[in-house]
Amino acid sequence: MTFANLVILVVRYGLVILFFPASALDKIINFKGAVGQAEEVFKAHWIAALMILVGLFIEIVMPLAILTGFGDRLAAFIMAGYCAVTALLFKRFWEPGDFWKAGKSQARDTFWDFLKNFSLASGFLLITVGIGGQAYKNFIDDPFASSHPYAGLARQPPGETP
Image (cartoon, rainbow, N blue to C red; front, top):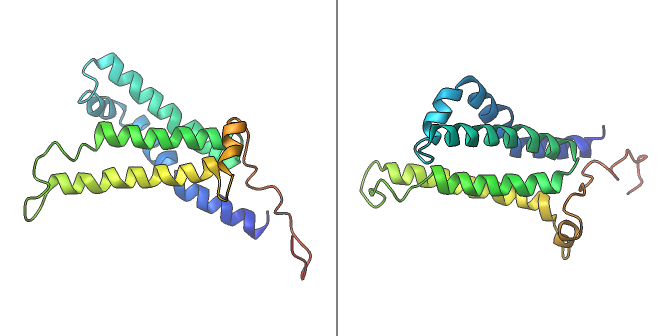
């Protein structure tokens, strides 16, 4: 593995570490508590449990796809959507009603988490569409394709540029 490939892997892992292993492991260890939190939004216990299982699947499979580069664009797109949806469902900063209150504010604390979710979503969208002029067309033309993050970075002899 070249240094460039290692940097790409570390950056991608930095994006997914919150989900895999952290949040996924928390859902596994504390499944009952996770379902209880989901019941705040999905009142039926079976729907809440199903949503936690769907979240667990997303938090394990999509990060692995992003890390390996296998179907990573679609996986990153799904993760971006997951971040946005979980922000809207579980980071409802508008509910406490103390956003503009002087001093400690639950709404402002939740607002920062809300923004973090959308910041992560933006990072995932960079993997989805790439960078550069028409890079987004790669995803639109073939959403199941890999971005091949580790290809083309083979070790170059000293003094040569790729």
